[in-house]
Every structure is written in structure tokens, then in C-alpha cells.
Image (cartoon, rainbow, N blue to C red; front, side, top):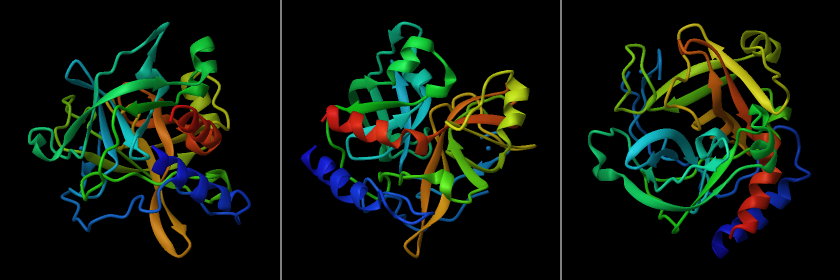
Length: 275
């Protein structure tokens, strides 16, 4: 954990005054990938490349996958608060699975116990979707490999002109079945007012409205990452922009995502306090 804290302190602070369009990194090796071809469904999507998303996590309860998540350091997984907290009960997750691609062939993956579940206090008090973000602390530090590597996180993505995103997960396909193979789909930024009108809920700057007519996140994708390719000092890296929060049952059209950049201070402070 000392290594994680050192990374946070060294890599985050230099970018607090960075120029527009740059992102802080919690780990200097985040999102460095082994090349992989996309096999080419998340509803309406495609099979992801085998090594293209090594930060993807399956959040497990009693051996059953209930949500997605993303590895952000060697000790912490980022997910949605509603995946962690249900009413007045902190859901007792036993494990997270990392390094998986095809759930029918789990030999590359590892299963790690979770010893802490952390959500914003305002979420537990109001249960409002504006605070739909959570952290899972693993019981041990996990080693990185081509199959297991953290995604990069943003410092202030609202200052970056990003309109095209990628969403990944093992959620429900168009045929209604859960996908055994990790899926990916390209979706686009939409006006928050469209999501507000669609769902009859407040959608503010702490959230992102995105979607596509034929492709979207679906049941089982909750807590997973919404990412975009961002230029980081001349090197393009996938940066996590959002977290799958809620959408429509048909899994097409619009979905609301938690805006990760709005919660960067919360993420860093919670990791430091729970080191």
C-alpha cells in the first residue's frame, strides 16, 4: 500500500495545475496494452480484444457475477455505489475477479477477497443516483500482467473535448442472455437534458449522458467503465470517463454514467484514508 500511496502523491500533485486536456495517472503504467485484434455483444456491441481491457473486473457475490468494475490501483477497484450499497445494507461482496476475458475459460483470471466497501456518505443518506460511485478494497495487492493492469483516471475530463466513448462489460446481449465473452461498444455523448427527460430524474454535471441507437450498456454492466482515448503527453491512452449507473430496460438509446472526474478528490482521499 505504501507503493500505491507514493504513486498517488507523486503522480497526481504535479497535474493539479496542468494545462487543459491532460489527465492525472494513479499509476504510470496504467492502460499500457499488449496489441490485440478485435474479434468482431454489450447490447449491439462486439467481442473485445483479448488483451484490450486488462482493467476489467467482475464483482462477485456468493460466486455469482452481479456487477462490473475497473482496476485503478493494485489494491482498489472502482465500481458503482448501487453495486455496493442496497438500501441500508452494505452488500457483502466476497470476491472480485480480475484478468478474465471469457468466463467459460477462467484459467487466466484470479479471484481476490474484498475487505472494505466504500461509498459516498451522501449516497447512503439520500440514495440519489448523483453519488453512484464506490470503491472496493482488495484484501491483498495484486500483481500486474498482460491480463491485469489498471485503467488511467482523469483529473478534469470536463475540460477535454470528448464526445466518443467506449463501454465494456459482460452484461446482457440483444438476445437477452449474459455474454460469456467481454463485450465492447462505441457510444456518443448526448445532452444531459435528453437523459433527464427520458428518465424523469435530475441529470447534472456529476453525470454523463451517452448512448447510441443500437449499442449500449445493459443489465450486468453496472459499475463498469466508460472510457475514451485521450492524448497524454503525446501518448494516447484509454482514460476512464464514467461508471455505468442506470439506463432503460431495452438496453438501447440512452444511459446515465457517473462522471469520474467530478469524484477524483473523493477517490484519492478515500484510498489514502483506507490504506
